[in-house]
Length: 109
Figure 1 (cartoon, rainbow, N blue to C red):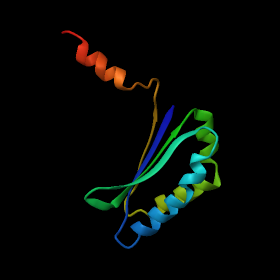
Figure 2 (figure 1 turned 180 degrees about the horizontal axis):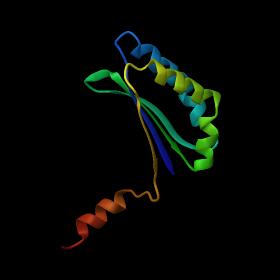
Figure 3 (figure 1 turned 90 degrees about the vertical axis):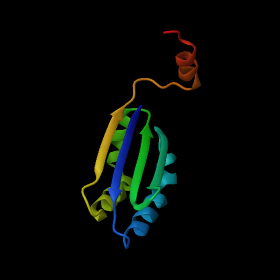
Figure 4 (figure 1 turned 90 degrees about the horizontal axis):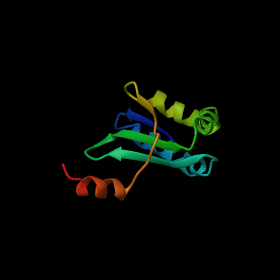
């Protein structure tokens, strides 16, 4: 799985437009082959800070998405940011749930 994250900071006059653009493409991205999730967040206490987060099943799915018209809109929003966006792609080799908590809490030592 690949996690993609873009964190952007906007001025008070442009943040609403940026969020609206990103929200307008979230459902289409979620419906794209290989997309696990796609979300837009505004930070609590700093509504001018926006995080756009996606999860993809494979690198091939992500690469296809990065060439899409929807991602062109993400790039456009990045250009609207007041400062250079923080962009991060992370490869996740394993995923666990509550069993990890249970194992840690029952392990002795």
